[in-house]
Image (cartoon, rainbow, N blue to C red; front, side, top):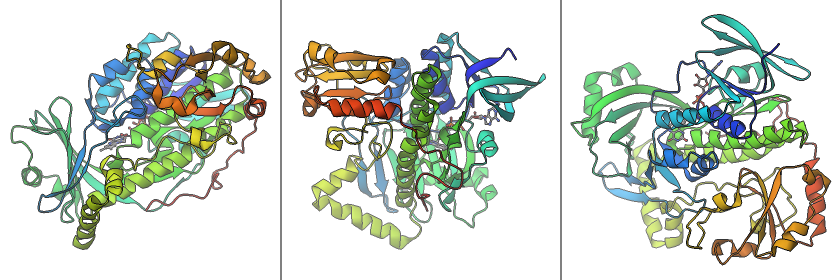
Length: 520
Ligand SMILES: Cc1cc2nc3c(=O)[nH]c(=O)nc-3n(C[C@H](O)[C@H](O)[C@H](O)COP(=O)(O)OP(=O)(O)OC[C@H]3O[C@@H](n4cnc5c(N)ncnc54)[C@H](O)[C@@H]3O)c2cc1C
């Protein structure tokens, strides 16, 4: 068989495209297959977060992506009487980017797809469906079917980024767990909508919960919740849609470009993969869109997989490292799903009593500034921090071990973002450490074989990192902190060596790493 790839990625949604870019940058031989003839046409996700923009920065396409976003929009929650009872406006740029920006998924996918043209080692095949999988000792053989028939290709790894109805997940025999959350929402996309505001409005009206989300280029998304007994065909008629839009302040000049009813679930795969086959994005977890996190979680998966696959394929670390992927990601994804379900309950109260209680709760918070700020500044979003995983757990969590490193701009007159100064990949950062001391730190034999570079920074230009002054910080390619230690802390250096050779527990479907989460 001549067709042998390092990685076969199934699905060219945002997850698969991001992973293909990461591996392309690493020079890996990748095949990306997509059943559709092009990237997605319908506007699905509308909210991209700071962590995803940091990934786009890492992939070298930040400027293009940001040029098509509206940065830092907020959300106003309205009572049925159209009175605002909560305004959420996330401020700050802890990770270098606005916490939430409006964007359009088809444009983003087009941009990430186009970025793949940079890599001769990445091949894409659209209108090509994965139809079967079989494993061999040294790889995975995928049967790919297109208009001209079926061919077999081999990959050392196969990643199922093939969405909610994942063929790869079915092949793995993995169950989706999480409970009974199941809601139908009518989505209407408008173009040419001159909206005099950039913030989302949520109509918290139990009679008809609704959301209006202005987007870039005069686009406007409406989402209307269907009641369980409602027939969606009744709601999709021209008369019904015109009535809904008119009652929710839609600009008359706007053109309807899409109307569709989606079913939203809150589910997570109990086993994200095994051996050479792994799941990512919607194939591994389904998040209702209310917190704008489904795609963002998929992009986080892509990066988490990308650097692991690269190290394993390079022979720098053993294949067991893949197990730490699910161990890290599943808790964080579960937190995001819980948040989405909770936000959905606030947005779509079931009855007048819960709606009134919700309003009373948020209004009363105004007398308690700290609690009010917690909601108003969107501090409730789970931070990028892992409970377990590929980091030296013994080191102090107060110093951010297991968490994403903040990304300030340098106060040295250049205004550069920290990552652009630190460089990509594993970095041993010396914070206020003399260059010579940093160079002398020995992390153990395993680390001598890993692609790691060293970089000294001064807190005089990044005062936000003053809490790390005098320390060495081992940073992963996904910008999570693996260890924080004093330069003479030999124990942590030994622990890092042990960590690199750790064997992680394998997971079997039906027996996940932790207790299956229940979302609703
Ligand atoms: C109305 C709506 C609003 C949303 N809003 C947000 C938001 O604001 N923010 C956010 O972060 N997320 C949001 N989401 C969720 C987001 O759209 C998804 O989480 C995201 O698209 C998942 O990306 P993915 O790449 O994992 O999967 P997908 O985008 O589903 O891509 C999977 C791809 O795999 C292909 N495929 C499937 N099977 C095969 C096969 N056998 N062979 C080859 N190819 C195959 C499919 O054709 C598809 O292109 C929203 C979703 C909806 C529906």
